[in-house]
Image (cartoon, rainbow, N blue to C red; front, side, top):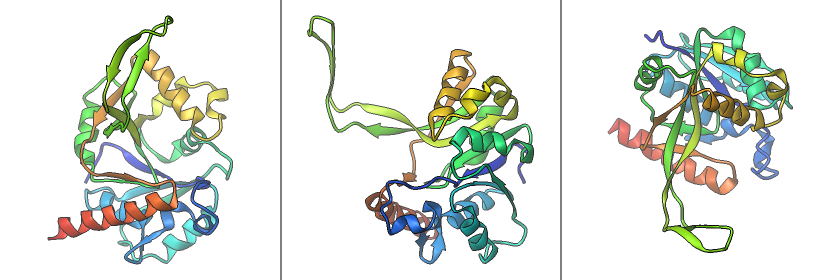
Length: 240
């Protein structure tokens, strides 16, 4: 069993880039081998000992509730719902859910799947002075990057660098939410969470956890098909 943090899955977005047909259901309810991506995520956490799951729903939240009520998830999984409304940004949904979790919470986007070791991530955060620890992964930029001065003279050229990007996982101390102004909490979409992270960075309270293994996310129909295959491959290899 874990005593480090609760898990909060953010699954209230509108999936604006998924196309007309695929937008009929929330992104996280698309199925792989007749099991929704959301259920795959929950079982991944459950198999690591995490049985208390909080879902931050919004847009089409009623469909998510209905789907999970009819799922075959283990009976000892405790699922709670928080609903900040269909137009709430990411930070607003996290803050709306704060009464449901303890001193800290792992947030994860509903359209992202990883093979993160959650206990290792939790220990790294707990042993730091960070209010928030975000998970980053490598990404190889397909282009050469050029820097130049105000005289248009090239001062640096880097061919296809390996960049680090945020993959939508983070451990957040509840106390950190008291540091963010109300006007930031009310920012739309992802603007609020990015501003929140910038505030903590300026306070030297934002840390990172580097994850170089499996991380799958999707925002378009094409990315969804790739994500499905990568998740199938993960479970196939794991179960061999």
